[in-house]
Amino acid sequence: MSSNIKIIKAICLSSFCLLLSVAFWYFLKNLFLWRQGSIIADLIFAFISFCLFFIFSMIYLLLIDNRKIILISSFLITFGLLIFFLRRDGAWVGIYSIIGHAISALILFLAYNLTNKNIQHDKNNSIVFHAGKSILKVGPVLLVVFAVLLSVIFYFNSPLINNKGEIEIKESMLERLARPAGNIINNYIPIYYPDISVDEFVVLSSMIGLPFAKGGEEELMPPVNMEKPPERVADYLISKGIYNLENLNLIEHLKADEEFRALFLEELKKLTEQTNSYLMYKYRDNLSRNWEIELSSSDKMSAVYAKLLNSKINRMSPLLRNLLLISPSLLLFSLLEISFLILNFIYSFFCWIILIIFYKSGFYHYRKVKIEKEEIEL
Image (cartoon, rainbow, N blue to C red; front, side, top):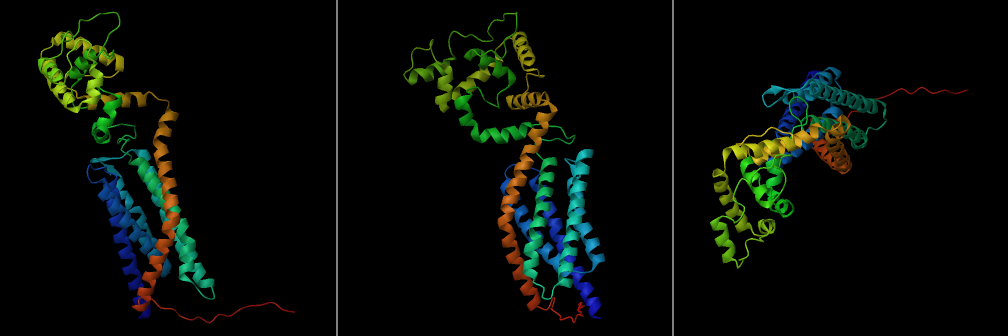
């Protein structure tokens, strides 16, 4: 009867640990979806679920000595991550990603079983078994495995990598990164306006005198009348006490005056609509050849900047591309290792508290075992 109760308790504890693992993989998957506006919340949920999962994993590995239960439950716990990470954006991930996730799950599975085996060995060979010391000893090893696992998952779920395993900076990601710092960027790059069209960018760069859309030998007339600014722009500048419009430093005003910048962009759209379509085609074709990317008049500059970055990255050497991809994962691994040095003691403390609660509630007990000792003597 007592043997059956022991098995039932082991199954209940391993099932609870399995549920915590499912919650952790789920919240970790949500975090790596990089959803706008919820990254902080996803990070908090992933961290809390990991803390609970790890603490109860240590208790589960400490208390259960049934090898069959450990093998089955640890397989479900560790390889459960594959359910969440083998598909991305409704499609299967690449073969290298599948292999990477599978190897990571296998390493975690082996770490769970070796940890359980080492703890049970200590229990069977210690005169007095100290659960707290055992947890403090095996905890750091298991945390290193988790640091490797999380770094590998981050590598294959980086927002820089598409489903084919290639580097791809998406327009939405570039907008999320650049939009909060738009005013700062404009202080250094006064024509960085991601919401304007390619044609508007051509007109703007021509008005400022930048060579992005210039061709080689063929000389093109300006796309708009460059002798005087639009009427509303001129009226605004005069109202600010600026009368010498011929020598106007347009870049400085775009950088310094946010109200002027908004007004100028409105007028820029109107000017672009009045340009000669053939002339705009020639300028756009020059810009396309200069930047070595395909462009259309309907493209927003945010999409163009993303294309331009991807084009530059894909022309890098394979070594540089691999370094670009692996560097964030190595940085994450280092940060996790530093954090886990502190968290190990916190996790061990909570394990100790929960073990006391379990002991007081009668979930487990200590028993004394008589042993025979063999000695050698003359």
